[in-house]
Image (spheres, rainbow, N blue to C red):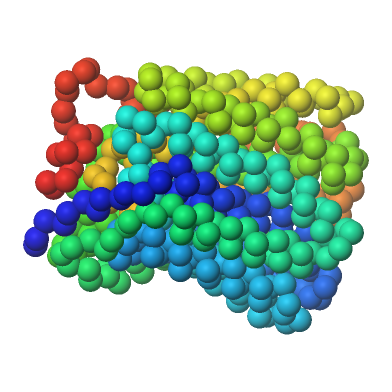
Length: 483
């Protein structure tokens, strides 16, 4: 097979950064705003409780199932072209969601939005990666992370305002001018991202396996909380997902043009970055979900007050992400990630000590520490991943990391919910749990998250430890180009 050349990207890199960061902001804003407005959406469409879940899950599942394929398509056909298709598709599906009177059409459109997001997201990060020298990627990735995290602040606030004062449909109308601005910025950037030379056949077998693997795991975990973890259906789904995941690298090594060239993605740094991405989102989304429940159910604060309390975490993450990039460029990603995972572990153990009668103020300090840790890990782990692969594989690499984040987040909410339900018992369905019962059920979820953060710390120490200067090895990008 002919060797595929790396694409050369020219143009105005900081304008490119602005455009792709704005497109990623749309994704985060959309997700968090919908979570706040889901009650209004459910009432408007007349959804049952289970159908309401699918309005969210249809998007998340399709996104997780197609992220790597989206990244690979960007590598094959040009990152800018695939990114543009993704942004236009997200804007078009947003318009449909803003006007459709049909609940079924809305769920289907959410699934389509997940597919277009899977085209846009990996290409966004790949365009950043190939627009900046590897030694200077820390700062732009830090800016990207800060803008992304800003979406977690703006989303709940705007979602609440739109849902209560105007209509939840304005959440999606707001996507349209943002998408148009992102497209304009990309046009102004003059970035050139041509298709790769060489074979451009799509590995449909690998794509199918990468779709089935997260789908079976997420659906299995989802039903585990309701049917029980010993249910044959749950066991079959989870076992099937694990088997598909285990078989994937074996199958890929036997295919002439695989969706993932396994030998190019086997470096310790890349594998460590994937594991940390999954662990980080397991903790991040799980803590956001359960701290919101605690604030709303135990402390009885309003949705807006709960959102403002969580800004202690998301705001700190945004500030740290914005400032960490230059530090990483000078000193590398290892120490920020190690310190960040340690801070996350301490913060979660701290939160697990909450007592009945503690007010919202007692959460602020541990949430700030957790946000500090997340900010130290988010962009540096992304930099570690993209610097560990060849330029020609940037889209695929970012798709893999994004899938790891989505899968980690989905499994986090599912597993922690199941643990929480087990601890709370039947009271979770009646809403009659006392604060003491709620806190007793919440503590194990925080302890598990803290233990997982400690695992992430160990992963960082083992996999991401920097090599002595001048050392080569599998993490050498120049070597990867020849594999």
